Length: 334
Image (cartoon, rainbow, N blue to C red; front, side, top):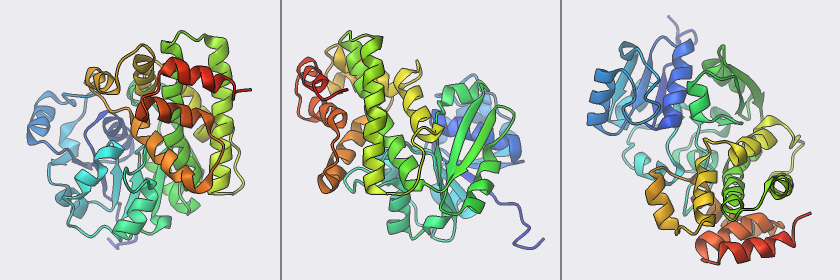
């Protein structure tokens, strides 16, 4: 079989709930997948139990269709398409072990965060540090909690790539009976929205913890989508409809859903937990904690009016009282 006709081999990087949901979607369309999970003992339990022992444990897998490996290089060598689904703060830690040249591969980011310290989008990071062409990078965006995907509740994913042809190819890997897909060429807007909606979900949670009601929440979220629009239109000014599900839809589900860890984290902060104690009790990563610092740093260059983002930053990093900061924020909402 020629190289052009050979079926692409897909590798999943990550062992959490979103990586597990992505693997489930892939196996609807792919006969076999490669899967990097960093701990051998987790792989051994996964194979024995036929489900991820740590995340979405109700989801059963035919493990004969999965090639597991705890060596990221082996998975990279065996795969033409790599889907990264690891928490953004740990991306560099995983990549530090990568010795295989991935510049010629196609990379899909399912990461809803930025690379800390560099304050870079995931697509930018792979482009600049691993020489992956931007047109070979895809972004999974939209309202897509892993728990609902795993439960096969109807979900809509947006697959963004500068090449619409490649975006459609990536979309075909994931679509199925309960997964509808749309494509976009807005990799910057969708990625920044994926980061910022977590920040606003923390704000929503803080306000919930402070016992603000639904009326105020509606005002907060309507101001949040305006803040997203101001920022993405400044950073990457192209024609986009901010009401599309990749933007507004993702914001709404992250701010309101019972599955939103960022809202849960914010609620704990609003109730008086310290950042450290909230993280310890959750046992999961709230991407918005890291994302708000990245956006704060990036916005020093653009100086977009972002009162909600700054309020969350002040609460989490400047240790300003949530009740005082939100009271001050109220004067900036309309």
